[in-house]
Image (cartoon, rainbow, N blue to C red; front, side, top):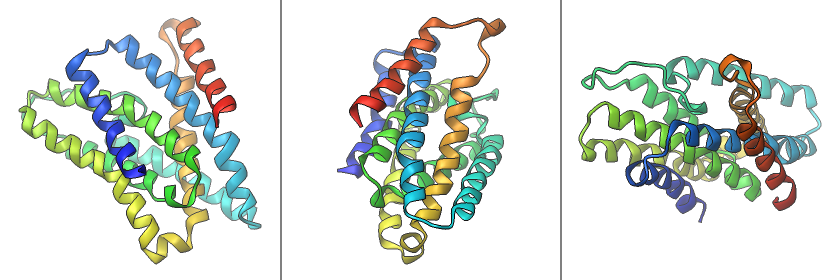
Length: 225
């Protein structure tokens, strides 16, 4: 079921672009909600679980920091697509391979600890993927690629997290170091979610709609997970 849900989250995001073409304002609100949900799941569920499963607290903390650092490096190649921004100007001819590879590595790593975690992690990733798929699909359309080529890239991206789930469950290395991998993913989530939530709005004005989306994401985590 996790494979289907992870793939469906990307396809839903892509379908939204082709069907209703959500505005930048809607996408930003979805990102705010997903960022709040992701951060809440990380703090309320993943952090307590990973520290319960280990006695080497310093080592676990180091892996969390590594996740934060590695994600910041990946974002230098993905141009911030993980938190809803692609700061590039495409001429419609050259595909930004590093952007796509970075997003795929990010999606693959997210799937690694899912097999050993409860549904909280799975739903956090699903909620996160929908607005990211919207952003990626919107970018691909603007590059003037054919729908067939766009579909190939989106399907490849959609398969990355399920591939991570599969290998995380079958490869001995990943099953042996599940706690460390989960700690690493916590660092990745902390980096992404805090950037989404705390990036400055225009003229540093208070954005009520964004604030409501954030509160809703937090409350949803508290009362449903």
